[in-house]
Length: 239
Image (tube, rainbow, N blue to C red; front, side, top):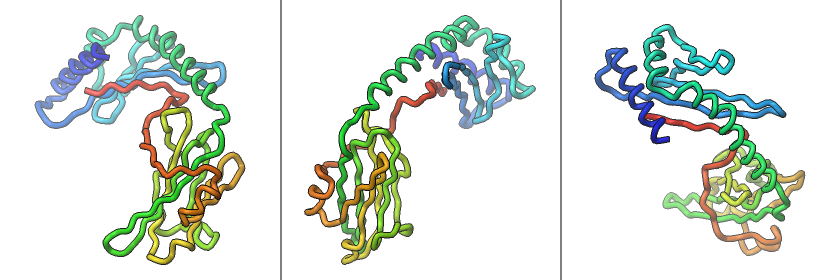
């Protein structure tokens, strides 16, 4: 990666010189990786300048293709100072698919029954008198779930916020949370509902009843880890 960083820095300087840019904020980004669909695996390697692709490696012809006419000079420079065709082909055809396969096996091994989800509800009182109720769901596996607040048994659409996604916990399970603004005294009107594995789990805002409702709720809040091993292995380099 250090070698690729140096290649990008050289390329960035060259592109800025060709465009007559002596200052300002400019970005050169290399995106390379592989993806698999069924038994087919394909690789990709692209370079973009200031958010626009301008060089793409074509595996059939084993050459770099320009996306914009003005990139021909940059293409010549990259072919001299960037990775060789053999290095690119080795990565796209061998190294990346091998890593992707290992990650896929790892994920399959993690898709085991980890038990029932753990849920908890926390509350926070703000200076203006409003209260934030937050529902946390942990130990989710697989990562397909819906977490929502209900008011009087119906979905509470207003004043509800959260990540909107299921996030990895780092141990092979997943987690999520959703919050809602309420007024003092409204707490008993709200219930948190988790839909997971075709089942519904509901947790009231009365914290003392939580453990009995969930069969093992936890009062601790784990850190949300924004990293995962997706089905597409992508390496990003930015100079």
